[in-house]
Image (tube, rainbow, N blue to C red; front, side, top):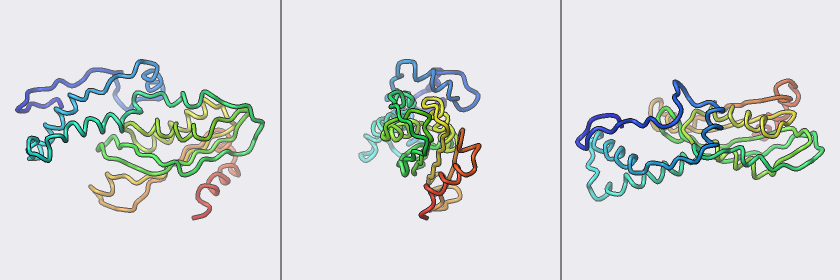
Length: 224
């Protein structure tokens, strides 16, 4: 954790690229091309023990003895996307001379806010207009899942999904809409349960053609 404690001083990790801000898509692609770095479970366990001490708890009491290990396994699961390349799900395509929108709605996901390391959960709606090739519908859901499993902000997740699909499928247009509830707004701070954050990212035809964008929004929100 980088702070002194009764268990000594833990030096911060220096692994990975040197960033002054969040990783770019190029950084994520470069990381994905490298062998997946194992999650340091032991380091997480030590850090969780320090947090429990810091808030005034006893990590050795019965109910907390296995908590550091549980948290380590949880972080390995919810941050698995850091060691995955979501583009692999878009490599197999099918020739299809279709020029109308393909939309997969209500793709449920769980991600983690990088500001407080609290979850945000919701649904993603992914639409694209093919230009001679399509991808299996389940692959879009797999891409959302892979991109979601990392610390991030919703805005970057939305933009990243749109850019990835645009790059890999080269369609005439891509539209991504993400709706999510953020724990950092519902259980702390302003404490507004029920609040939803909606972000969108459009590329190609959906950006240049207002009618296409309106059709996308209508298909996603029209029944509400």
